[in-house]
Length: 248
Ligand SMILES: Cc1cc2nc3c(=O)[nH]c(=O)nc-3n(C[C@H](O)[C@H](O)[C@H](O)COP(=O)(O)OP(=O)(O)OC[C@H]3O[C@@H](n4cnc5c(N)ncnc54)[C@H](O)[C@@H]3O)c2cc1C
Image (cartoon, rainbow, N blue to C red):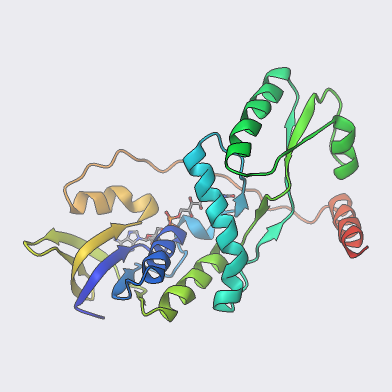
């Protein structure tokens, strides 16, 4: 492990590795990342990887747009498949108020160049015959929405960062961060690193890493459930038909 670096990123989830990748891409090659276990072993490992562009904020919308464009080029750059599938996304409205929200959203989407389409209940049924469209007012569709494999994305970003000179230290726990007159010292269970900047991307551990620099970070983890089911024959049938539609 190095004893000096320009930047130390703490946490090897998708956020930390992406920060490392982007610093390296900007030409900051003297950057390192420290992860207590394996890359993605925090929340990133559990994420479904849905990439919904639907967002009422101009700034966050821009970030989403940037990310989706990056995911399209990352495989070519790193040789790693990130499991990015653009399958579109349909949001249903069963009340007029919800539909109004979609109309308002469409205005925001237009200003940031995100494509949206409005669908009638019959069009929804045509796209997804398993949908119960009774009492549906309408829907909004994002043709560019999709999903990605978060762990594969993180590994691709790590490859991109390493290719530009960044280093990643796994199974290394950050136990302290001390400010000095020249910058910082990051203490780990495997030694210390002097650096100019620390970027803390410790996810659910933000309270603990915050405490190391005297901050009381007001965040708490919330439960986020997911269900794993057996394959459903009706859904599998639809998927096969979808692929056939693509082949034509
Ligand atoms: C069930 C579920 C489904 C989700 N679905 C989606 C989805 O569909 N779409 C979406 O956009 N988001 C989704 N998310 C949210 C997404 O997973 C998180 O927003 C994202 O993974 C957070 O990344 P992160 O890098 O900030 O945190 P993490 O992935 O948790 O990474 C933090 C890392 O820091 C490390 N660390 C902590 N303390 C230290 C220390 N002292 N020293 C060294 N390393 C340390 C940890 O080991 C960990 O690896 C979902 C989350 C869950 C749980």
